[in-house]
Each structure stands twice: as structure tokens, then as C-alpha cells.
Image (cartoon, rainbow, N blue to C red; front, side):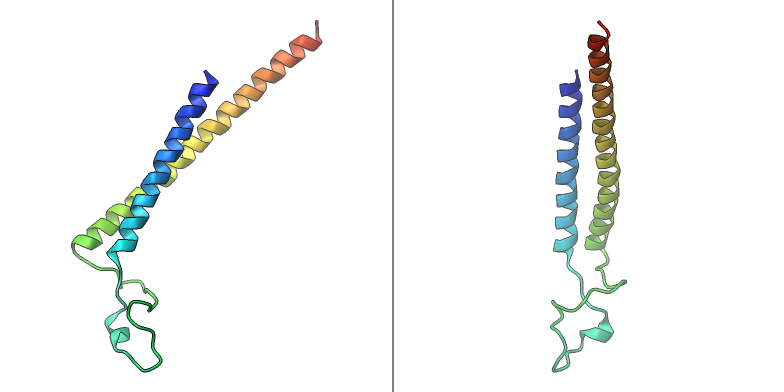
Length: 109
């Protein structure tokens, strides 16, 4: 019984890790451009591809929608990952309690 619980929770953790990776890829591939005021190059300024990303610099339109979906996925995955971790913690506590109860009953005989 406990092995099934642990296996299911472990599979849930792996699934959420894959969702996080996919969301991170979506966000990274969408790219960002610096604000227009920083887009003009100066001799010592970093190239636009290496310029720091600022709030409001994320693309809009279709890629903006995909970023929003990816951010929602990250939050969902975080909560699901936490829930699966709590399942493992609770099952471990239950298993430890069972082992302690069996151990104490063996000492009382």
C-alpha cells in the first residue's frame, strides 16, 4: 500500500518537474527586448540581446499570451509539486508510526 502511495506521489513530482521545464522553455524562447529608450546603441552599451530585461519589456500579442499561460503553469506546478511532497511526508509519518507501533508491541510480549 505505501509503495503505491510513494510511487504515485513520485510520479506526480516528475510530472510537475516536466511542466516547469516546458514552461521555462516557453518563457525563454519568447525572448524579450529592452525598452525603446535602451534600444539605441552606444559604444559601450551591451547589445540588445545581452541587455537586461526590464518590467514592461516582455513581448505582447501571441507570445505574451504564451508567457501568461506559462506563468500560470508555473504556479499550478508549484502547488501540485507541494501537494505531492506533502503526500510523501504524510505517508512517511504514517509508515513510521506503524513501524513504531509494531516495534512497541514486540517489546511488550
